[in-house]
Length: 215
Image 1 (cartoon, one colour):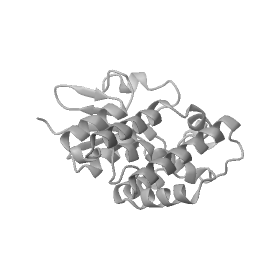
Image 2 (cartoon, rainbow, N blue to C red):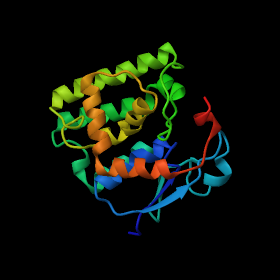
Image 3 (cartoon, rainbow, N blue to C red):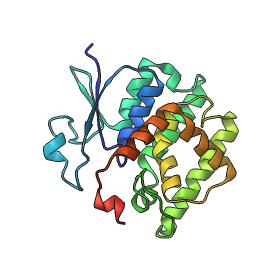
Image 4 (cartoon, one colour):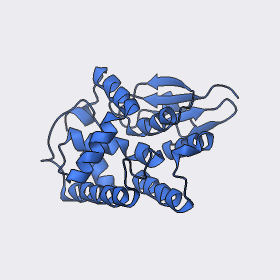
């Protein structure tokens, strides 16, 4: 098999790129990283159409096939390293559920607080719906951490943690209120070496997207 090539976009902004990158790094999966500029809204098709069937990144090029979409790439990574999911069948099911909840949920938090690792602001412009989403995320973290005993959502680091990693950065960027349990989880995530490396690289980027830097 050819060496996998993971196409990603700006580390500062691309939450969907961050997720499979972290899963593959934590899972010790060898891959080539291909970094692209994230286009302005609606401008990606001409650039990414030749890379991915969805004309979006991330996309994982395996040589004979391209895997599009973050959670699918994370599932592929877990096929290479099963430790990316919990050992117990029930725990795996709950962790997959948690990942799917993040994948399809919390639209108001996403809209109110686009990922912008370099930025520091506050939550004053968040809608009530966005605040409700953030509160629910914190409640779920509390529930899963209590169930597993930590240090990560389901014990050892899993795909679920990679899926929630961009939300961790949003809590920091927008100073979103959180419980002490959530803060402890945030601190552990920020201290994870691969996430720390992603954040350090994001902070060195200079490109700006107005929709994320002005709003």
